[in-house]
Length: 137
Image (cartoon, rainbow, N blue to C red; front, side, top):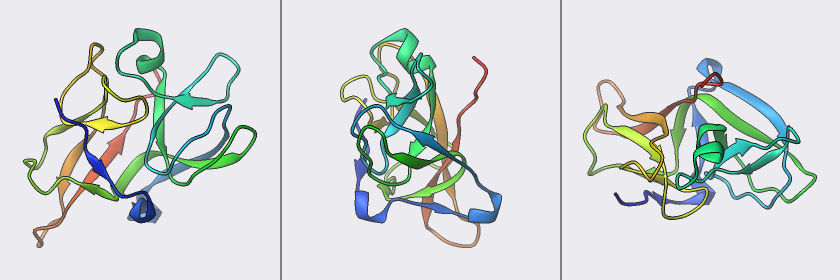
């Protein structure tokens, strides 16, 4: 398993009209492109693929930076750019990292939590991540 390389300045929703984005308050500092979970207080925390409860509570990907108390947009479903997935096969799963809190990876951590798949944009050689995080576990 390896964490995906993220370029925070390039993190953005693709196909915005086909996306589900919710504005959610964060309880911690979050960076654009980090996987986030919902804590018991209903606020965002960083997702962690090394612990069951937190990994399973993963709800999406932060689309911008924020600090505790900020309300930030979270991509729940839709295309996501800003990650280097060029060497990963299309339709391969993308997981919450078990090594680094908040990161995405090409393999499962101690807890397997898939947040999306690598998506080859039709008619191009460009790849993005299609995020589709289930809210019911």
